[in-house]
Image 1 (cartoon, rainbow, N blue to C red):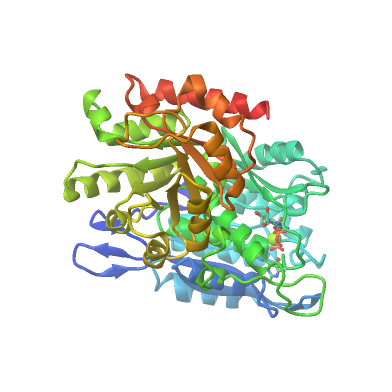
Image 2 (image 1 turned 120 degrees about the vertical axis):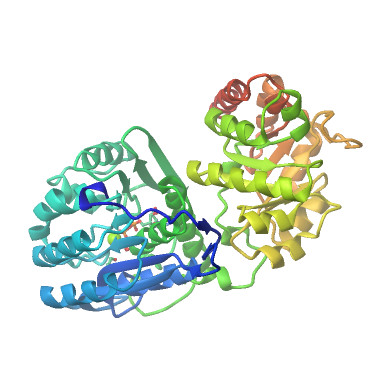
Length: 522
Ligand SMILES: Nc1ncnc2c1ncn2[C@@H]1O[C@H](COP(=O)(O)OP(=O)(O)OP(=O)(O)O)[C@@H](O)[C@H]1O
Ligand SMILES: Cc1ncc(CO)c(N)n1
Ligand SMILES: [Mg+2]
């Protein structure tokens, strides 16, 4: 938010941990979000949704109310705008007291209210601004009319770090252009980016005739399509507010924008999946449960923020190989990610705990800034201490159900399985994915029974979880592995074909290209 004056950066003595930051003096700083939005009496969207999301994501959220709506699952019956001076009073009250990391805006129903927001943000700079340009409720009621379009485009969008319009809002901001395909969403995102926001996320929840729910993210250079199966449910009220406030919460915790967007997408996806059959209200559009993560149901892997597509090119580090090629694990991880690795597993069998912990913390920072998940092999303690995204455990390591009870619902747990029975147990215990192999003979793991492509196929057929293949996989045989054509085989895990090589980046590039080619043929 450069145009609004100095951005507050993290004080040098603060280290970001999970939900709280601990200063060297031991003072606990909690990530804080301010939502500036409308109240939804039905509590599925607006301020209420924002407060629930932040609570679910472990972030403190204060609220400035711009309007009060009489709203339920049948629609919006009435809207009362608060006087701009009172909105300003609320803004001054909280901005002068709290140290907000991120401000998230929802319903800003008049130019005058936008004006007082801009003035207060100028007086009280924050680190990031998330703008969800709410205009029409999903039930079709106008929440902010066309009178706000010009101040949005001229004054608010240029200072936003990210804007999150749905397709109707994107169209309205662009003068009514048609946005009915993913390609048109990409063009819209590019045009909206030219209005000044650092990042744009065009949400595709209302995209007609699409079997997936696709959102298009644009950073000024690259597009990312965040795609998930469309969930058939009436309970989608508040998905947009939830997505935007989840992005704000993750940013407040220190994530990069892409990482925050990916987590938020999975949060909404998991919330909808968990809530798809609940019945709240009698209308056409019900709310969903933002606190699904607190429910105990280890059988469903969808409660985690894990995206099975992340298993596509799974890099497993090996400190002996990196030492042989005279590179640090941190450099190896950087190169693997730059080359296209979609998830990283830190596997360290030699280093002392303190050294492993420092290495893991450095790799967490790299992965967080790239939006790539970092898992720790076997060492639950290290994973907890560095706030990694999860762990991978073998059959002789700590049992998965115990790991799940230690890490909670949000962390990713992978488990090695050679047989269908082990795959079933992994699902029962609440794992998120299975690593199955060794598919081919490998020297990176001693006395490791090779299961071959047939064994891999058997495990995939039996598994209710996504599977990544591992063991002796390299450029020359990766395509054959992907071609076993089992829908839940999501990728391959690579060790020596990445790290027992002179150039990790080159090998990662080649592997990523090979895997993409093999996917095309399936
Ligand atoms: N049925 C669905 N299944 C899966 N994801 C969905 C579904 N509907 C919406 N989403 C996702 O929810 C998020 C919000 O998108 P959406 O287009 O619903 O925003 P919105 O219209 O602003 O929502 P609202 O105004 O109701 O809060 C996006 O990530 C979108 O892909
Ligand atoms: C108050 C409010 N803000 C945002 C939305 C968007 O869903 C809504 N329905 N109600
Ligand atoms: Mg919306």
